[in-house]
Length: 393
Image 1 (cartoon, one colour):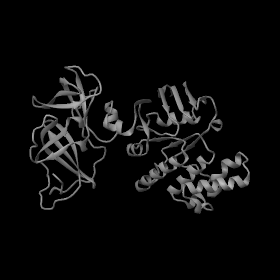
Image 2 (cartoon, one colour):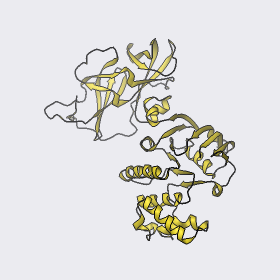
Image 3 (cartoon, rainbow, N blue to C red):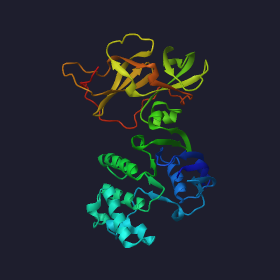
Image 4 (cartoon, rainbow, N blue to C red):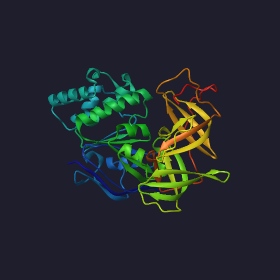
């Protein structure tokens, strides 16, 4: 079984600690992602697995074998880079066959294996073309075929879709998953794109400052972040700080400051033992919040707040509302499930009610620096008209 095990791996460059004592285990056949912002150490970690960088401390084991000191060409590992690294003077067939020819595999076997590999990546009719005649997606397929034909135990992919446009990236993600399922070996995928990692991964690790801050199933990391960084980096979230004033079963009650000496209380689930009087943070995803003009019926397991719409951002599949509650701002996503043309849409400066179920928020054992509720967008989508937009309310 070709399990990859990393033990206490560290790497620094002239005093800068790029990877800081990282340990993890990747199971055979997994599609595992390293996710994080630029400079977090994910590519350095990948390059140490590939053998292009030597760790300062720690060991790397593949299938029980210590490969830490092996040069790249002696490791059963292949890497696909962002620029594909195809040979421009060779056609598609020769690019894919290159590794087999280096190993002096018989010509008849090379022909058969290359044909099967090109069929796997759906490029069998492009064998005579040169890289300059291929699209970005086709080059990516050839790079994958060339990496897989030597039958590695581990395939490393370093932001392989970064150079492609959005539609092609989405298509290639599906193709990569299909290829992974077909060959059955372990893939390790490095990306800074959260949607890519969430879509493609069996499991994933979120990295920050050379450390893995959270690892696990994509939906578990999204729904149950263990740090403010994980909560904010994976998708969008509202961060609300408060003081613990009550604990009952798996629920905690927080008293949150809304400005002008006023407070409100919210309930949330938790995964660690909170203490009365401590300051903690609730992560609340924007799509978990319902927004309406009418006050909802009071229920023990719902949080209900009243606020004013401060901004409306139209993004096609849904509308984002920025709602002010005292000095705090909440971001709310309202999906465009259907449109009622005879119904007045929510508009700027309108008073609305926000409500969500207790179990749809998640308690984090941290407090952000001076931030009560965070809704600042990473980029501003197209704004809706001041006349408002049709929305289901």
